[in-house]
Length: 463
Image 1: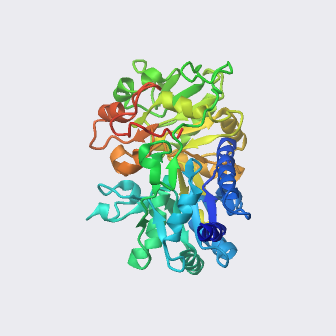
Image 2 (image 1 turned 180 degrees about the vertical axis):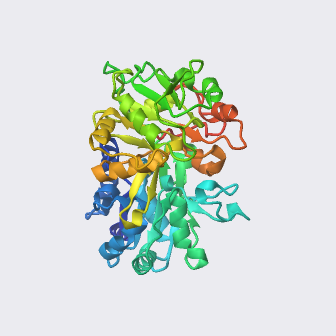
Image 3 (image 1 turned 90 degrees about the vertical axis):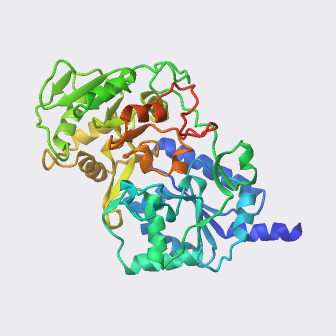
């Protein structure tokens, strides 16, 4: 037993934990709780606590969330005295003792990339159709289970980042892109599957041998939407305005329209039968920037009810309004909140993050006020609205908040095991699918219902 304790003590000091936190008050609270839990567990094992860092607070560089630009800093800070960098999300529970034992099995002097592997069933647009011949061959980590890099690998990758500029285009699915960068067309290590890195709910029987699990319960957030202090989320007052740029209307009417308490459809001509509203901005083939900025202005005008939240979706977005309302109860609408699926552009070279429009863009009233007061504008009516908004937010220093529950693509474009531990809020695009069937399978329920067939029964809400 004495030997075991001293080995744990040694190993714990050699692990650097990085919580993939975000610059938003709700997420900072969640990350602080996770950090406190890690340090409390460590206290029982060692006198000197391990290093636990919050990703969003390491620097002012917007690109830090994409991890690769951060590697030189990690190599410089921890290359001498540490053995492992362990990344985890704010809802990843860690059993410290089990994790130490798991890491101790691997030779810390070698290059290791450890995680819970995901793979694509078919080649997918979000991975630029990589490995089209055999999509399931490439494994990439489910960040929710935690993932780890040995220090020799961190040092080597950091040198590579320094010597060869990182690509400066889009960051779409970070976990896949990080794995591709590490694999380096076969010159670097593959992801090593570690069965103890799990996404099981923490209290499930399967979680017995897991070093990591997921919180079974979503954080209990008071309903900021309701006028009372009640935490019951089923009687949420109408506090969201829903705005659609144009209309694939029949699908919307058969799926989520009934849940939207205040909804407007926009087109370049008024049609009383739908009804659509003409914003005086012509429809465009490509981006919808002009239309989106007109929607932002209308949201603040007296023409629509005064709501705390604005949701802008495409006409081929499928969305669960009840689940969105539960999620929004965690956020403070008096803060400038911009929420959805976060993508990045040019993050390695001072670029910006943005909410990708197809999965749905959510703005608090305060965010809309600040965007419009800044004088930020479209450079043309058909510019990509989501990217222009990202540039504006970046210039204003306002954070873009990521939720993995919004999806820019269809359910089949995501790894099955990734979707299995979430209750999704949105999907997008109707290519080769029946959108009504997809809505009914993935997005339709009341808040008390079991998640649909595509999800585990003892699921994790991630809300």
